[in-house]
Length: 497
Image (tube, rainbow, N blue to C red; front, side, top):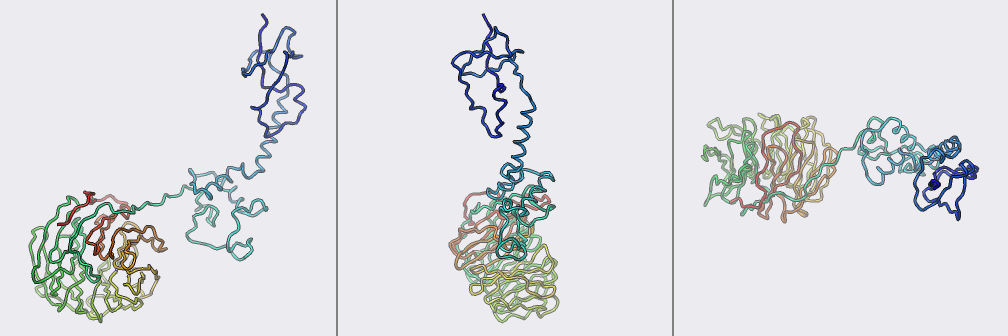
C-alpha cells in the first residue's frame, strides 16, 4: 500500500509569486481539492491525501523547494512597518497605559525606552503630539511657558529623566482607615470648647476628665482606674501628663492645680494662684505652665515650695491653649481674645504676638521636624489653620478649613498634621505639610470634636467629642526605628467607667 502524506505549511510554487501580506492570518487558510494532487517534486508513486486535520510530515520527500529569502524579506517588511506605528511601540504602550489606566511601571526600564518616551513627548510631528497640549504649553493655542507644578506625578509631565516616574516604580499611596478601630463610651465628657480633658502619656496611659472625676485607661491592658473625684465642690477642667508620664496635673474649676503620682494613686501637691478655672496646661522639662480664665499664665516648678514662680500677662481674655516647643525654649499661648503669643522664659511679656486670627485660638502645635515652625487654628468665626516662623516672626501660610478648628497635632513620624473640627462638619482631617493636601477626612462624631491626643508611638490618635465617645483612629505610619509595642490592644467597644 502506498504511504500517505499530510499537507505541509510551506507555500506552493504558484503561491511564491504572490506578494507577502504582513497582516495575513495564515491560520484561516483553507485548502480545497476534489482529487489527490501530485507534486512535481515527489515520486510518481507518492500520493497526498487532504483532511481536516493538520499533521506535519517529517518525511524527506515532503520538503518543498522554496526560497527562505522571500520569508526573511517579508518579515523585515512587517517589522519595518510595525516600528513606524506608535500603537506597536512598547514605550508608547507603557506611556498610554500609565496615563489612561493609572498603571505603574513594573520596574526600572532601560535607557533606550526612556529616550523613546522623551521623543514621544516632543511634538516632532502632528501624529506624535498626543497628550502634549495643555494650559501654558508653548505649542498650545494659549502659548507661554509650560506650567511647572511641584506635585507633577504624570509620566507626561515635566519630570526630568533622573526623577521621572519611568525611572523607578511609583510608591503606593498610604491607605488611611476611614473608620475608628475602637470606641470608648465617655459619659459626662463636657462639650466645652475651652477645656482640655484628654491626654495620652508616654507610658501609654490615657487620662480623661469626666465631670468631677479623672479616669485612667491603659492602652496595653484596656483596664480603667479611677484616679480622683472632686465632688461635690469642684469639677475637672484640664488634664496634662508630665514628660515621663509619672505625674498627672489636674486643673479644676476653682482655679487649683493638683499634682498626682499615678503609680501610687496619691495626691502630691495642690497649687493655687488662679482666680478662675484652669482650662489648659503644658508641661516642660522642669516647668509646668497653667492658663486660666483670669487671663494669666502661671509658671510652676513642683520642686519649689512656692505655688508659682512667675506670672505671664499678655492676654485680654481666657487662655485656652498652651504648648511648649520641642526644645523647651519657647511657649505658645492662645486666648479667647484671638491672640497668639510667643513667650521666652524667664521674660514675663510675650516676645511675639500674632493677631491674624479672628476667633479664639485653642489649637496650637509645634513642628517636631523644623525649628521654630508653629501651627495654630481659629474658632468658628475664623476656621483657618495658620503657620508661623517664630524665629523671625513671619506668617508663612493660611488654610481655610471651612469649619471651627478645635485641636491640631503634628505627627512625629512623618511631616503631616491632623486637625479636629467642630461647627459645622465635626470631622477629623489629615493634612500633608507643606502642600496642605488632604490625605483623609474622618467622620463619625455627631458633635464637635473638641479633644485630641496622640499615642506615644505616633501612629494612633484618640478624639473626644460632646457625643460622649472617644474614638481611636490609626492615622500615621510607624517610625523608621523600632520601638516598644505601644499599640492599643482591644478593638471592641467598651466603656471608660
